[in-house]
Amino acid sequence: MNRAELALLTRARDRVASVWVQGVYQAHRQNGELLRFSELPVNCWCAAGAVWAEYRQLPDKEGVTVVVVFEGLAKRLPDHRDHNHEGKLVDFNDYPDRTQAEVMDLFDRAIEEESC
Image 1 (spheres, helix red, strand yellow):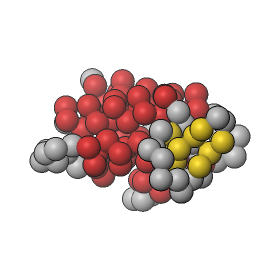
Image 2: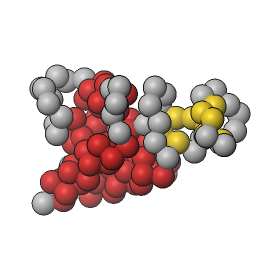
Image 3: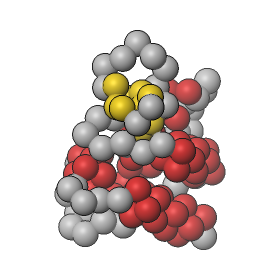
């Protein structure tokens, strides 16, 4: 993973840290209620949604391969040999009883290990 991809991963982590969601890539949470298909601005993300949101924000995508970012997260999951890295991340994020802390730990391990 190169520096630009690592920076994207770190910014995606920050999105998940602010407000995390399961079952959708992104949504708007207001007064504790999740508005999935709202015209209001998005303010919460799942792990994969946060990666895509940061990727879309890049003015110049040269040197950044989003698949590499997904792979950096997915290879820290059990049975990571499946080539559908984004799908594995979605499954991990949306697993019943999954916590935001567990998702944050995945991001933190990926960032730490990819920084070496």
